[in-house]
Length: 305
Ligand SMILES: NCc1[nH]cc(CCC(=O)O)c1CC(=O)O
Image 1 (spheres, protein in one colour):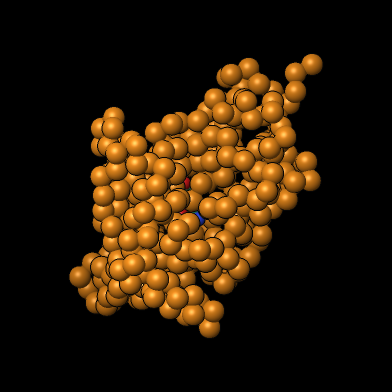
Image 2: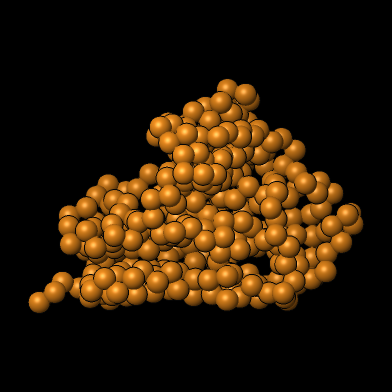
C-alpha cells in the first residue's frame, strides 16, 4: 500500500487554498494525501497587534507542534509568516513558484494628498513605509485573516487597508478599488509558499522536493538571510525583495525603517550567482554598520514598552 502524506495547514481560506494547491500537485505526481486543518494561535487572538504576541511564529507554531507530535508529515505555510530559524527536526523541502510579491492598498476613494488619510494595517513594515511616504496620515491597527480584514475595512470609516496582492488574488477577493504599492518593499518571502517536513519522513521529503522552484528559492533565501541578520529574532519594520534580472543576476532591495517611518536605511544591489550564499547577510551587515544597529536597539526598546 502507498503511504499517505498528511498535509498540515491553518484553516483560513487562504491557507486552505495554498494547502490544496500542494495537495493537488502531489496527487498529480501520484502521491496519496490527506489535509489536516489546524487552528493557530495567531488566528485565535485577533485584537492584539502581532508584535505584542511574542516574537515571531504565531502562525506557524501550532503546525510545528502538530508535526513534532507526528500528527502531520508536512506543512504548507505562507513563507513570510515563517520565522527564519525553523524548529529542530523540521526542514524546508520546497518553495513554490512565487506569485505577485507586492502590497496593494484596497481603498474606498482615498485622496492621497489629503492630510486626513486613515489607513489600516497591523504590520510594522507597512505602517513604517506608509508613514515614510505620507507622514501626515494616521495608521490604525488591523488584524485578522484577509477575509476578516476586508470585512472590517468595509465596516469602518478608514480610507483604506494594505494587503499582500498574492493573498487576495489566490482566493479571488481582490476588489476593483485598489492601488499597486510598487514603492513599498514587500516582506521577505512575500508571495511565496513554503513546504516543510519532519526530517525523518523520507517519503514526504522526497515527494515534496519535486515541487521546489529553484529561482524562487534562491530569491527568498537572500531575502531571509537579510532579515535574519538584521532582526536577530525580534520583529521590526524590514522589507526585502530579490528578483532575477536575467539568468545570472538578481536585483535586490532591502530596508530597515524606524517604527514612525521617519528613518529609512536602504541597500540596493545586483547579486551574481556565486554571491547568493552570502549576499543577504552582507547587505544586512552594511545596514547595521550605517546606523542599523542603533536603530534596531531603539526599535526593541520601543516595542518592549
Ligand atoms: N500575515 C498574513 C499573510 N501571510 C501571507 C499573506 C499573503 C500571501 C503571501 O504574501 O504569500 C498574508 C496576508 C497579507 O499580508 O495581506
